[in-house]
Image (cartoon, rainbow, N blue to C red; front, side, top):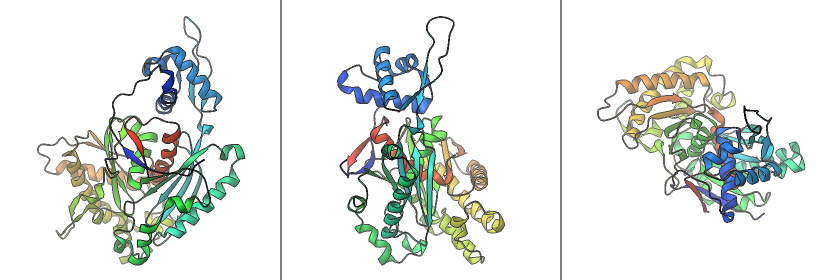
Length: 405
């Protein structure tokens, strides 16, 4: 397989329909597989009706996908008349993908199956990310995955998705990284480095956009056609879903909500990233004499610094409330989802407080959106990264295409 780096880009299209022309068989296979992936098990007759394909075409496609190990045959369902229908569903073991999340404090590597369930997970924590260490982490992780899988299973890995912050070398002062060292990211060529130890294709995505994609595919996005999305990691970011597809924008940076204008408590102007991010909680904990690395080393144990946490949630919720209204002034979102690299209890509190503050703000000319919590949490960025190889080879993203990097 030829090595490739692909940037995940977004475009626009509407209501995909099938075609019975034999020359577009690959498209039809992706369409059928994508419908079953998103909507669950269905009989061929239902797929044909929804896809606008002939029953014969769908039957041939389903047999081929089943032979390739991508679909599973369910038990026949007998009706009152006619032959029993046989529901078909996606085989989670039909394909796998590796997702790597590069964060400013941690890196996560996940092997996900075709339905987005993590099969193997690896984690690394550090003061700040360095290219050499991240590449070594990926190399060692692939070796671990290879040991855990059979040769046949390893051969079903579709590729490697990488979710990383946009301009990871920016805001180096906020995380205490030496500018000269962190700037080495500018010189990193993923293609050259990764090609030294694997021939798997590689896809690079913005980390917050990847998190949004995971929520869209595996979480609340299954029931929401369009929504705004905020994800709070070391730095806050976001994403946009329009017409059932993550919208990346012409340059792949749509939903860059961390760059929204904001104001600190003292009234000075800043960006949202400077007022609603986890690195601010780190600083608060350090001032209170609590080791801030516990946020990443013990991610589920946040209960014993409640005073500091309470204050951070209050400040962050106020910032997010204003940001939610701001994005709704541009895109008329019905729903905004909020998630982050924190325990579920923290997410629940932040959603409730942000919702309350937002209702008290001046919202003339706007319809206040429903604010709800995401469902993926810490794994969102890694799982979103792993979804890129799946879409590239098996699924149909109705509005998105790939641009060669």
